[in-house]
Amino acid sequence: MQGTAAKRGGFVRVWWGYVGLGLMLTAGIVIAAVLTATPTVPQPVAFNHRKHTEELGLNCEFCHVYVTKRAHAGLPNAQTCTMCHQATQGTSAEAARVTTLLAEGDPLTFNKLFRLESHVFYTHRRHVGIAELECATCHGAIAATERPPARPLVRIDMDFCMDCHREQGQTLDCNACHR
Image (tube, rainbow, N blue to C red; front, side, top):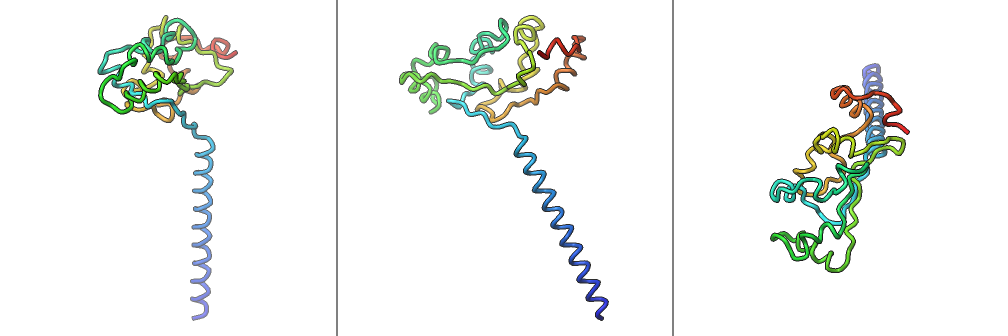
């Protein structure tokens, strides 16, 4: 009888050891995910891309004025928004808020959602203006979003770019994209 109790006690200790190990492993994975996750990107207003692109038929260049001409596409500013929002457009509370913010002189400073490492040279002019890639190629379904996403919809990393370059028959020379 005593041997059975000892065996049972050993089993319980081993079982709790596995549970503890599992909990530590899970905690480690969660901590690693939190530390490596892309931080959320706050925006001044809950911009509805779908409303502007699908419903109103505006192209990306209407608000991102340099998308075909410069390295950076440019983000809309208060002057861009004021072209249409001097008076409240539509019935949404956010559209009314945009008009109010603009009337109060708020600069509506939008924050970049997509960022590349500083050593990567990327130009919208070359990819959108010359190669005529669709914005969705790199930005995913951003045009269909009704609120600003907290994080990029597409993970743009070296593999992503290299796969596209291979598919399009473009250079794989490191110096073409890395400075």
